[in-house]
Length: 79
Image (cartoon, rainbow, N blue to C red; front, side, top):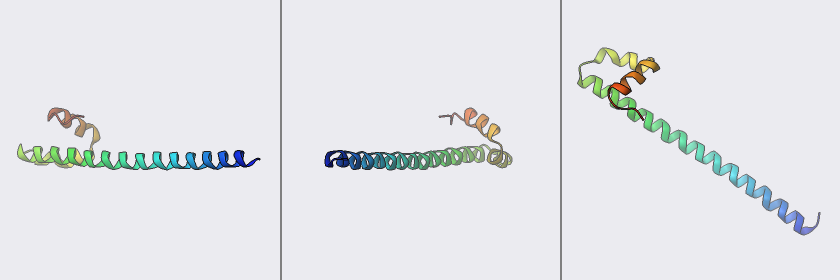
């Protein structure tokens, strides 16, 4: 390999490594944002249930994904 070929190889390798790092950071940031949004949405639902005196439904909301989705729709908390 000539010097030019070696430099190109090193550049391409570093570039691919940088792109992979950027993608990994982006995924991590996206997951963190998604978790924060999900927590906020669940908190809002719990507060609304509490306000409506539907305290007994809070445990079901925490454990039943289908029921939780139904209540998100009922309280207009859908995405």
